[in-house]
Length: 203
Length: 163
View 1: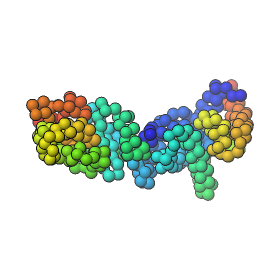
View 2: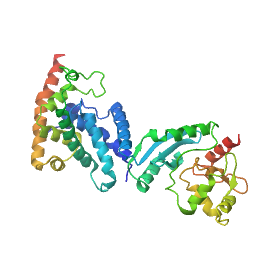
View 3: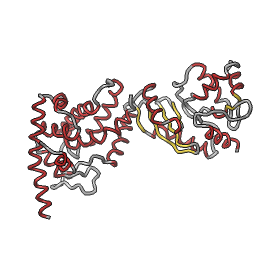
View 4: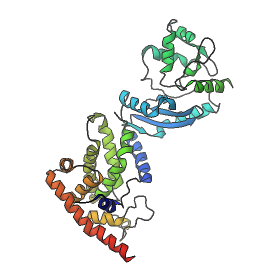
């Protein structure tokens, strides 16, 4: 019988963790998966004034933006269930998104020009979100105004739900929808994040 | 289902150790890459109760055979094989002596040793991966370890004493 310490001595020369090798192999896997068309979802994180964002893209475009308060691990598991578990941390696909977000946060960009994958939003919610793209930088609308613009003036609560479940916050500007009394209202990234964005755009 | 990223993080290092032990430093990263690319393709169809380690080792076993065969068909790049493999400064530079000792084992013994002691698979699973009976897998691992003690551990101890 071999004892545990014998095993350790015997295989001590084979590192259990070889970080440089794993980094290299991970990058190669991401490249080859992309090449073979099996990288269904690529993601990365990006540090911003509203905290660390999770950015995820399919081959069609940006599919999910999540704040850290939304628990990135939980979001990735949801993406695995709703889109595909073939998910890798592969920043390359998010280069352009990251660049435009950086520009936005430094005040150099007023509008995002990115291919979007809308598959995580359906029906009325999607109609609402599509309309939000018409609310320009630095402007706001009330939930009631958005409901009217979406053709359902009485669906104020549903507009709130559509904003709260927006899979693409920031890029689809649900932060520009505020309460009729002028207060900011809720936000997936937390009320402070919403105020930060409104202040940024008012500057 | 877990994102595949999690599978790479959780099991990538173990599979790398297995590849290094089975095909050696020169081919290990090719074998690892082929294994994980193939695993990623098949991953959505993996049954929820599957044993992930055994599944990955099964793929690695096949890919190691492919990589070794492909390598055997290529002319040997002589300049890449120094007389005494050095591990100084190379990222894949684990102990050349251990690989020399593993390489000298019959393939089945080397596989059984790696799958049991590095991947932690029970002998029944190893038999399913590489064919043969559970008892044969157990014997192959035991014989492999016995030889490694003689060819690798003891000379290493003697070197220690000589220092």
